[in-house]
Image (cartoon, rainbow, N blue to C red; front, side, top):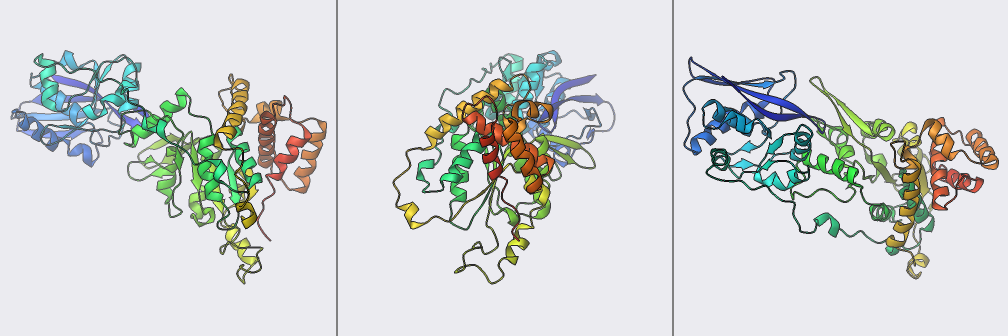
Length: 505
């Protein structure tokens, strides 16, 4: 007799069903696991044996083979423990095979038969729902599984509770979604009103928020670049239901959905400039998601941009264009979502005071060329909006607070985003930054005067075709902010000012 228990492996954030097959036969006592398991899966037999002993059961003196099918899918992690244990219980006649056949099972067993938290329960529950099955998961993940909808959920605290449930001596109640306010909803963002001066930078921030564009800020130390970046999430509209689910599934895969509540705010990731390649784009032995995936549907802020390794920065080219990142390893090719909004900040040179004769180093302006050349031309070209952030003066600090804060700007951004949602509702995109090809030229091609200005700029500024298209996207966003049906010359003119930053010479 072969017992079959369903569990999952993961390709990126997509669950792949794995059939745990337990076969007992006569022969010398043996307990082995086959099917490309990693070290954590291979150690499952010790955790399972100890857990069964803890509830008063011992493995029979038989030859026991655990096959994880399909064999060509790499199995990683400890969430196979519970499925293996249930398969053994079915083979031993403790639990009915029919009772567990309608569930996807996942959970790590402790040596005392407790069931520890597992990663990836939310996407697994969604997969189970799509196949008409229920899910058995750790009690700590029960609330998380509820977001998959109206499915059968068993969330035991330990293996004995699960056995008693199937034997009818105990009933496990279905977890319920927490009624308490989500912690994410309590997040308050710094207010734009706190920033003194920098009116042109604030305008650029509103433009990039309205159209989902990438932003590069160049200015001396203390000019407010980081302050501006930290206020961007507060003016970007909240996640829609589809985006919430995507962000929450990524958090679940990486074990960051500990409170059981889905994510309701856009991610804001700000890795340090010593970030490695694997940490940025994902990788390592298990090809885990990196910062670009953790920032999916949110903001990735890179401060001190030239200080990041050149190889790490160039690895961002693919996700900036496609919204995905592929991690290629000898054993697997995994694609993760990575549709993020890049916000970067940098000093004009290493000392940071280029153009200030009293504080600039004696290598200026050559130091600016060396410093900025750490960022490749193609990387610069993929950033829609480039702005100069000048130093703040005492006069700026003495000005009265601005009448416009985060809430006022956010309401205007929401109106611009609503125009774009309506425009692209049948095209599978949400913002102007995603428009491309014929669709972009259809919605963003300016009037004759604007086109003439853009064509002239293409020649004089040496724009690439990518840069040309990015100017069109930004101009379309500026037109949306004004409620204009068509892109005009003044919109092109403003969009061109955001392409002015070039390597210092």
